[in-house]
Each structure stands twice: as structure tokens, then as C-alpha cells.
Length: 193
Image (cartoon, rainbow, N blue to C red; front, side):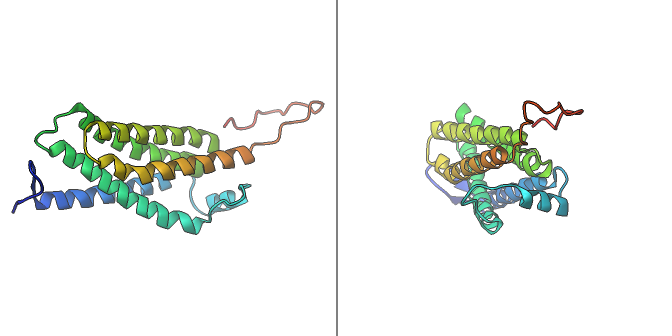
């Protein structure tokens, strides 16, 4: 059964299922990112051993915040999809925003997997910047397509920016110490990151 959802658009139960799909996809992508690299007790010990900046948030904060962000971001993806269904929206901006949204989710999974799972904070930082930049472009294209869909991306953009500052702090604080000028060079170069 279809009901009216606005002047130019009809609403159906399919949209409900698509909303659920977009929200679940956000959680699934996060779960995928958590599977990249060497996860488990060793990763927990490694992460706990890192020097952290003052005021570094506890792990108890990350799960509920990321869960809320995943729900809001899922709604944003669904709204981008709906924007592409609207009869008057054949704008390349709306289509580009939806494609960029998908890339942002993928980059986010890689950021998490590389920086934590593979224990490469510096390389993870590069993926984080790519994620943040892609979210920025997604929001700009969504705004260019018209409407307020881009507002639903703001929490994701802000939290990712905050995550970038944390990632940078961890990377910066945990750089290996440079050898003294009078000490011999190491036999094998340290891991480049």
C-alpha cells in the first residue's frame, strides 16, 4: 500500500525496509572494520599500552556514541537514497552524494582496521583523513542537491573529525624515540608508519 510522503513522492513499505537496510549496513561495515588485522586480546593489550593524551575518552564512551552515529548516518544514507528516488531529482549531485556516502563507509572500515587492527596509527590516520574528506564531499553534494539531508551527516562528520584528532595524538605520542647521534644505526629498519 502506498501513502503520500510529500508533494512529489509516494511512500511505501519498501522505504521502511530500505531504512532498516541502511542502518544495519552502517553497523555491518563497522563490524567488518573490526575484523581487519590482528584482533583479540593482543590488540587490547597493545591499545591499552599506548600513551594517551590527557582527557582521552574511555572505551565506554565509544560504543554508545558510535552506535548513535551509525543510526543517524544510516538515516542520512536512506534520505540520500530517497532523494535519488524523488521524481524531480535527476541531479548528478544527489547521485554523487549517495556514491560518496558508500565510499565514506568503506573508508571508515579501513581506517578502523588499519589503525587499530593492523596497529598502524600513521597509516590509519591517512585513512581517517580520507574518510573525513569523503564525508565532507558527501555533505556538500547533498546540499547541492537541495533539502536538508546534509544535516544528518553533521554528527558523523564531527565525530570523525574528533576521531582524527585522537588518532593523530596516539600516533604522535607513540612515535619510536630517535636514536642518539652517536649510537650505531640499527641492523634492520623499524617498521615504517
